[in-house]
Image (cartoon, rainbow, N blue to C red; front, side, top):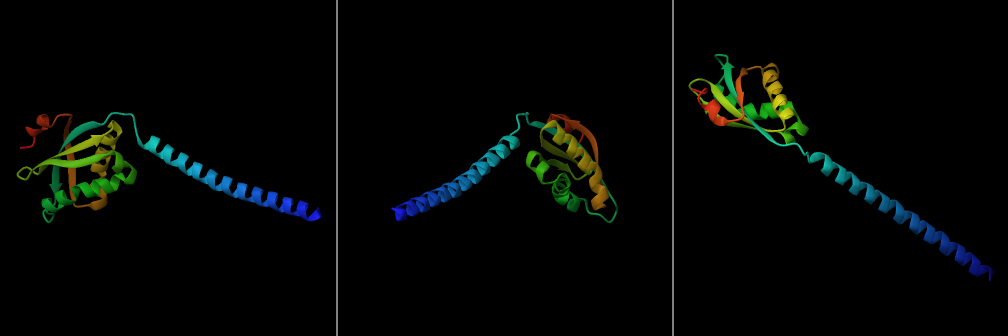
Length: 150
């Protein structure tokens, strides 16, 4: 009889241990799922995407090539915006006029994204130091800026 009580106590201790082990792993899994859900909800914004066009004039020194500046332009501004802003902002060059060194840049994102891109445009020449991109006009329609590019 004494052996049966020892076996019963050992089995109940083993079942409690297994239950605690499973509960801790289940708790970790639930917390991981809740974290993923929170990240998914936070990354999905309910604000509307805004498309803006910026007319820029590029002013470069005599030894600097404008083509090289235009080629690296998107990378430079994206680098200044950072990883988080790069996910919410889309920056592309819509058109380039090589005669007048002007270009139209399309920015898609929320309105705050547009403002941050303008700030990145204004400070990019300080960090990279070769050309200055001066915003001339901004518009919501590409056709309004097309007449100013030439």
